[in-house]
Each structure stands twice: as C-alpha cells, then as structure tokens.
Length: 334
Image (cartoon, rainbow, N blue to C red; front, top):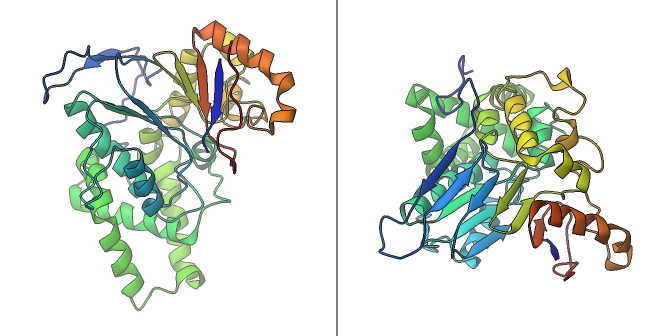
C-alpha cells in the first residue's frame, strides 16, 4: 500500500451534453506499431481506466502558472521543450491532480494545454486525465477569493476571443494556449490597462468569469469532463484523498453527481450528499488533508487508507492539495 502526496455565451458549448450517460471507450496507438493493448475508459466522467503497460505520470497543483506547468511537464517527459507544446510522452498516461485554477494568471491556458496534449497523446496510444480539486469546485460555486487580477483579465480576453469562433468551442479552446500570450501582451500594452486599479476592467473580468464558470457555463462544462476520483490500473488519483465512506457511497456515482452539478443539470442542494460528499467539508475528496500531514500524525489514518485501497482493489493512492517541502510524505507497504 502506498500513499503519495505531490503537491456572454447564451448556450453551453457543444462539448457539454444535456444528458449524462455511462460510457465505455477505448483508444489505441495508431501512430506507432506497438503490441500494447488499447486504453479502456469506463464512466462519464472517466472513473476506471485500464492502461496496460503504460508509464503513468502524475502532476500536482499548477495554480495558473503556465511557465511552471510547462517546466513540470517537460521534466515528466511528456512535453516538448521547443515551445511548440507537443506531446513527447508516446503511449504514457498523464494524470493532473487538480487545482489548475486560482493563484495565477494563466489558468485557462493551462486547461487548454492539457486538452491539446490529450488529443495528441491519444493519437500515440497514450492519454491525459485530470481530476478536479477544491479550487475547481470553488470557482463553479462562484467563490473567487483566490483569483488573481490577471486571471480575471484572462477570462475577459477568452470570452472576447470566443466570438471569433462563433462559439466553436472545441477549436477555440484547444487553440487558446497558443494565442493567450498575444492577448496578454496586447492587453498590457493598452493605454486603458491599469492592472488591478482599473475597476471597470475588473468588473468586466468578474462578469466574464461568472459566465464561464457558473454551472452550465463553458468552462464549468469543461471541468465536468473530469472526475474527482480516478482509478488507473491499480492506482487511485484524487486531489485530497479518498476515505472509506467515499468508497461506500460509490466513486462513479460521486463523479457523476459532481459532473452533473457542474453542467447545471442539478441543484447543489437537491441532496445533502450531492455533491457535498465530494466537494464540501474537511474530509471531502477535494478538501481532505488527512493523508498529507507529517509522518508522526499519520498513524491514525493508515487503517482508513488500507480499507479504502482494499475496497477499490488498488495498491496505492496519489494526491495533491497540500504542499510537501521534503518530497512524498508517506510510503506504507503491506
């Protein structure tokens, strides 16, 4: 057993379906002739993934820092270092552990980059998966406490940029990472750009962010494509940590409920556990820090972790959320 801590659109986009159904999909390496079996994905959003023989890479919180995100992905061997944002991971599987949002200026650009890499990876027999963190759920709730001034500006730019594509969401979203720097530079050169002191511009950014991230909004629907808990082979990936009562509730059920809420298909307070068990409270999946404490504080939670992994048929759990200044904080083996 192992636990590792890494630390105005009137209509929703076409990638935001009005109904959610269970899916099982597969994709295989079409560009290089390997004997690997195809990756099989079950659940909508993806919950259980079979990726035989693949290298699995996990990357933690990126928080709107595009330069550091690229650096981390380059170090992981899945992103080219030539500035072209090309997938170099061949048939590897990349899992991003949530908290792309807040604290930085280039959140949408990172989301765009990850989507682009997923498309490229699938063409080579690999894949990119994301799980949502507490900062993703906070923004869908309209909690913008940790949003930087530059991130509000990016939202305003992105909403204006979408007009050039007449709401062709997929094309616009995938291309945003490549053009966002131009928009950012032009904005800063504008005579009307006063940074955080331009209150009119700030109001425009807040409105744009609300439109994009509210339940059923374009970026909320993009986040709804991702789970809060994901199993790849015999590894569990989530932002904060799974506990036995999460497993008893059902991680596929939990993923669906959070996804439906983000898509604007249910009211958050329809049921206390929908999506409360995943997104609210100190021991919810996205807020849990119980596995990320100092090693001396972890003894009481090793039993919970063992029960969780056994119930899911997993050997390890990888989480983000809590900064670790000395590497992975806990290795526990049966």
